[in-house]
Image (cartoon, rainbow, N blue to C red):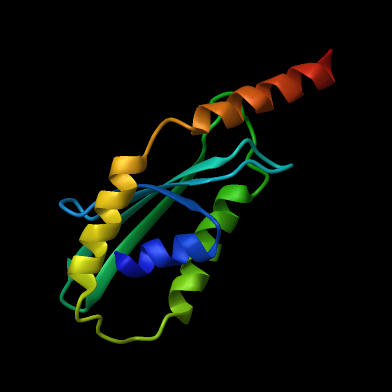
Amino acid sequence: MLMVVEALKQLSMRVVKVDTTNAVIVGKVSSSLKSMGEDLTIQMEKKEEGTLIAIHSKCNYPGQKFDWGKNEKNVKRITDTLTTFPDKEYPDAEASLMAIANQINSTSNGSGCLTIVIGLFVTLYLVV
């Protein structure tokens, strides 16, 4: 989980929530010319042969009909970044992850709403 948090930070994707109990990380991707931003859910499951990671990216604006390949690109960028990390043990990973989770979960607020409101304003302005 610590590596996933680090990968999202390297990609300038915002980590919104870290659920260490269920091994889930929730993130957000900022809006761009192609989309109003995306919501990320990354679920991890420990297996005998390693860790299974399921990455889900979806548009965070309900009215957006096409993602223009942005969600697929998000998943690819995350998986590509994770494959660059060295395969090593992190002895204090659990303590580090708990500290990060406490910091992120305590400072999360609904600041993503401003992006949607600004995006709606720009879209309405262009239509009018």
